[in-house]
Image (cartoon, rainbow, N blue to C red; front, side, top):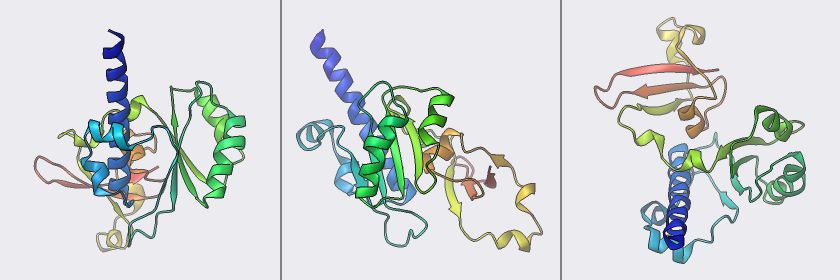
Length: 200
């Protein structure tokens, strides 16, 4: 029974890593194809779990920054851990963006405490459970693309305020790491209908 529990727990860790790699690939980061194709046996042999990770953007993705993945090993996460462990690691590796993987959900106030007084580094927070499944693989979820050139709006005499809005707290927006003020195009997987959304 204990062995089965360990196997299930490790399988969840494997699923989490796979989602992280897929998410970063979808964002435009340079993830080795062997990671994306890795099975659980290879994962056990080759990956030291919960080691922090550094990733670079692919060529041509100039809007992205070097990114670090930081795994919190403690249940309770606060500003002290961020100041003493996360920020030194980020600064040492010259990263301008970081994703912190939490063991469990934390309160809104705790998130605020973690992020306060940090302005020069973009920090995103995910729990391990949130990364067990790649939500973009659901056939009901459209494909998302970042639109960097907004000039086409002028051709149709449309302003950003007239577009449907989507919040940065939306799970899909968080998956892709879209920021406030960005414009995204969605393509429906069933009928290829195209829509545009403004991130607020």
